[in-house]
Amino acid sequence: MILLSVKYTARPGGGEKFVREITDSGILDAVRAEDGCISYDYYFSAESPDTVLLIEKWVSPEQQEAHLQSAHMAELMRIKEKYILNTAVEKAVL
View 1 (cartoon, rainbow, N blue to C red):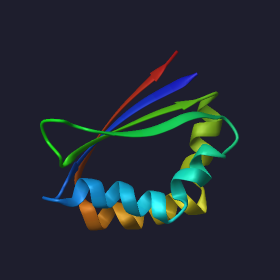
View 2: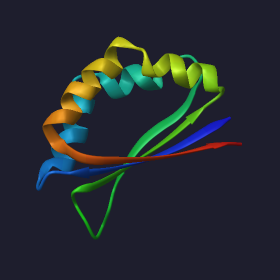
View 3: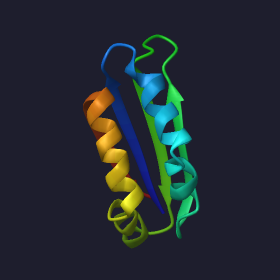
View 4: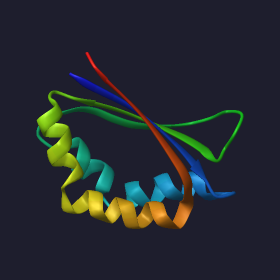
């Protein structure tokens, strides 16, 4: 299993807008329906509203890599450019 922790630092006021646009566009549902996706969940910091944490779990590295090549991930990258200043990723194989 692959576990990813993705910390997004948004522009002021952008954290909630970022996640809302991903959800409203259907990207979140599309990712969760992908082969090998165990979970894909966003969380907000209680202390910093412009910090968003994404926790992803995938069955295999190959399925997680295929996810990155999907059309909806290309759309997510376009949305990310509008709202996100910095992204930090930690990856673990369990």
